[in-house]
Length: 81
Image (cartoon, rainbow, N blue to C red; front, side, top):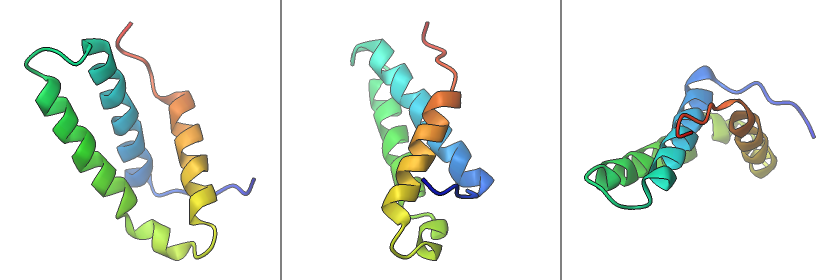
């Protein structure tokens, strides 16, 4: 798999997405924060998928997206434990 040099803001947005996802999962879908967390996930999803970086990778964007996800999943701390 090729190594991509992702912009810092894109990496941080993906980390924030995983942290928010884990927080939502830990809440069990109940509580006053559920809507706030879901809206945050939507905003982060848009920021990630619409990032200008993807336009610089014609043909290899899907593989790069998976690399970003794998890289950030491994280094995003699980704060729900």
